Length: 115
Image (cartoon, rainbow, N blue to C red; front, side):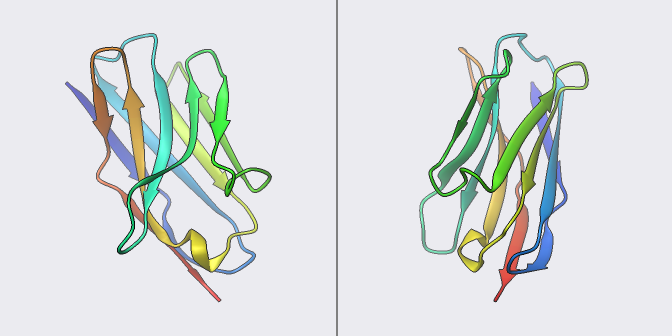
């Protein structure tokens, strides 16, 4: 079983920055993709960014140029640096770990951007 624990959410003014972290523990395949998704009230969960174990990244258009995803394979950690935050970035952010066999989610961390 895999557990994911996010940290780093909070309240920030528009234009500010936040950094999210996610720690994965348990039986983790060496070949996986880790990433961040978000869900705003009344909306579906959407991709923010992913990074695979080889370091290849993928970003939603809304995140390109403002957010940076990174990971530390030795520590089973994934990070999301969010800059130039906008009110529309307000959502619960979920950490995800995907392998060939399974898909795991963290409990989510709230990010609120005030205008």
